[in-house]
Image (tube, rainbow, N blue to C red):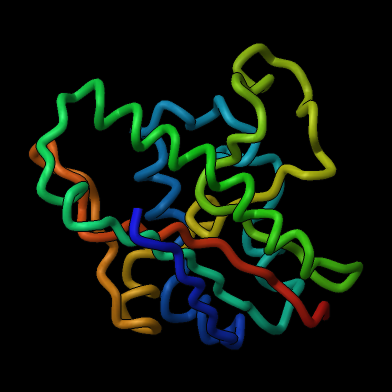
Length: 182
């Protein structure tokens, strides 16, 4: 790995919601994911998602861009190897998330970098309550936000994915902090 850089931008929640939030559309896309109904940070929820957005004035988008070195980019990986690398990076989100937790106070709410992965297996799969409700957070995506488009518009970076047994030029993990409680 060449390195990790942190990108941040502060936006008005109302503006972000107007431009990038479509709960119905993104929850519809979530239905095709294995985490739908099986991870406490993923839909369906027993609360109104828009109530979360409408509780704050500002959103600090916090993105971690992971750049790969030339050797990693040139390598062709087996499906198993690529899966292992991506799962290892997924576990790295917990460490990166600590930077976001550190910003949180009683007037703000952290947003996870994608789905929650604090536990090896989410207790929701077994109909049990969350084991870490004090650390579990929702993501921008799970709250109906279009992360791909917002990152492109705000930071001028396209979200990239591994394909054809190669790592992308970079990966971006996107989280945030809702603040300025209403």
